[in-house]
Length: 239
Image (cartoon, rainbow, N blue to C red; front, top):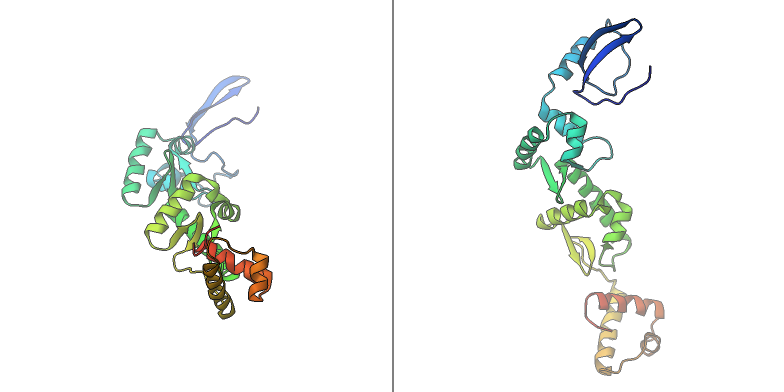
């Protein structure tokens, strides 16, 4: 006697090996069920509900398993025991209803998962904008580090395409930012930016180094470098 691998809807036969005798047979309804007794309240009702479970509900449940985002048709067939042809028809219905979305060439994702990812991305970007108002945003690699599911290129592209089209997200100079985000300078920084722009314009094509500019303008090098970086990002100056 030893455990065997099984999945939902697999047929099974129970045999006794000594003396040889077939005891019965059936169909696997739950491959990970916990032990129970026939007389326990609700057992028969639960088994009957599994036996008559709606294929559509079963399919959607696979998309919402913990820590799951994209699922392939092959995965769905292996986990549900349904034929790929039948699953494909159900998927088409859910795709038309926008309950399920295509992610890449073979993957699919539940809309609820997409929305959850957006809420997390929105929070990550909002926090970054608050801490770093003088930066354009976060690079994709930084976003993927903060939100591992977005390391999947198909999921990343789906999120970007969906929420850029919805006017909630933007991409500039390879940085992701909330649509309403704009680089903000303090009054002191804005004054320095204007003085720096005037100085660079007057110097023409032979400009001073950051250290020399800081000396000319009587500004701390760190403050001048920070403002200069913003001007480069906004393409007000070029190297």
